Amino acid sequence: MTITTERGSQQYAYTDLPRLMGLMTGDEKHGPAATSTLDALWVLYDRVLRVAPERVDEPGRDRFLLSKGHGPMAYYAVLAAKGFLPVDWLPDFGSYDSPLGHHPDRVLVPGAEIGSGSLGHGLPIAVGTALGLRAQGLGEPRVWVLTGDAELDEGSNHEAIAYAGAAGLERLHTIVIDNSSATHALTGGIAARFEAAGWATTTVDGHDHEALHAAFTAPHEGRPLAVVARVRPKDA
Amino acid sequence: MDTMRDRFAPVVSRLLDEDPRVVVVLAEIGKDGFTEARRRHPDRVINVGIREQLLVGAGAGLALTGLRPVLHTFASFLVERPFEQVKLDLGHQDVGAVLVSAAASFDWPAGGYTHMSPGDVALLDTLDGWTMHVPGHPDEAETLLRHAVAAGDDKVYVRLSVQSNARRRAVDGERFLTVREGRAGVVVAVGPLLDPVLEATEGLDVTVLYATTVRPFDAVALRRATETAGTDVVLVEPYLAGTSTAAANDALHDVPHRVLGLGVGRPELRRYGSVDEHMAAHGLDAGSLRQRIAEFAGAPARA
Image 1 (spheres, rainbow over the protein chains, first blue to last red):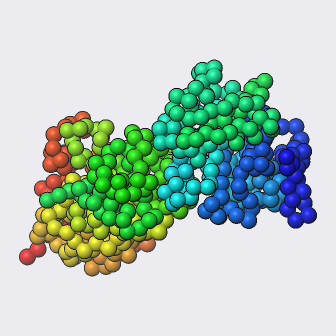
Image 2 (image 1 turned 120 degrees about the horizontal axis):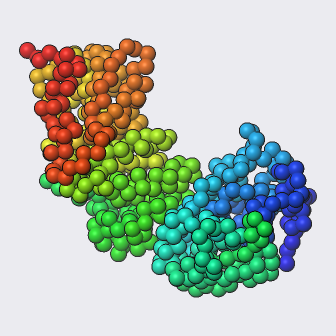
Image 3 (image 1 turned 90 degrees about the vertical axis):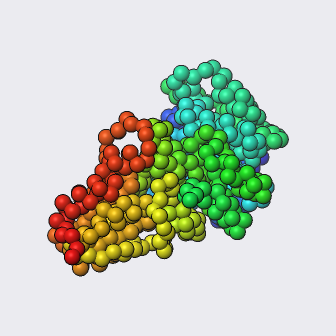
């Protein structure tokens, strides 16, 4: 398993991420909202996604769409660790002159495929991205989107889930970070909802890197894949 | 005569053949017109079912991969229902698409208010960077559809209506056309309202400009017209009254002027019936227009 990455003389490992996040918040202890996505993002960028800073515009790259745009410190830390953006951008997080806002903007953040913040937009855009790649005969790139469990309350996601399953968009992958924050949630309902729409699904411990990696790389022929990553409840 | 909407599928089907970037996304409405095109281009004619938020979101995703999406359904479901998708998935993501609506303000009055969209242009006008075409004839619709698709990665709205002028004009996708010249005011007629405006201003000494591309607003043409016709301006629009009043004011910001915005009234009528009956109810029939324009401009009848 590769746990370090090299950009010039600088190497960052998973263990550096708290320090990078601390540059944004001045604090190395982070609440669940900021860290719930950290492990899934790290495993994805470190071991799964075929993207790199020098190929952010390449048509054949994998796409990762952060739909859960609030609490993006983990995302920025991973992008910085992997060399998409300079580490010295991190301390200005949220300031007027910084490209790094409290919700990411694709126009400002190198490597960010979409701007997000308003919930329920990433998955529909990811559906279109998968369709667009297919229409251009680009069979290799995979499309990943990360949402929160509460974000799935948005009706726009239901439109996307139902369509993607029926259309068999096998290049499409959704990671649902489940911190039990959805109101009126049905226990076990997240995977069931995707399954009912024809998706392959796996539910894993969202902090277990090996389990995440196995889930992310599980075969799912002819169907999109949803990985439900369970993390500590928001209010725990 | 066929309608603007009748031209939509044939024109866009040809564009699918000509340009590998073009991709059509539908939400059930209008799918029958694309049966043959879908056979030829199965990955570029997409029907997402009755899912209008997905219609726009998926369109944005297609644009992010470099394609030129054409999104179509009734105006109520294309602009109003998924408005946040239009604002964020297209505007904020900095990608373009061609939105082609049907049903206009009240093309199907018997269908009631759920299928009416007099506010679509005003609503899109709250966003930056949209080109908006309002053709007044099926041939113009065809021309403007081609302009829209060919406009790089721009954000373009094409508003199709069953209302139509009797004959086509040479529209270019940018400029207002001068249809009649006078000296006692300028009347800007938008899209299918040109014929009623020409009838209403018969014998009145006013300049009539014809607008089929309303955004960007052709401020140059309006200013030039006011140099001989004076700065009394009447806007006659087939959607919400006053939609372009601010644009006309901006065009004339440094000269004393008056602007009257005519169009569809804001209150919901709660009436069914016919298009003509709704035109009359909103004061957009030739007789009502003549009275309101003459009163405002004090325009004397020509000798």
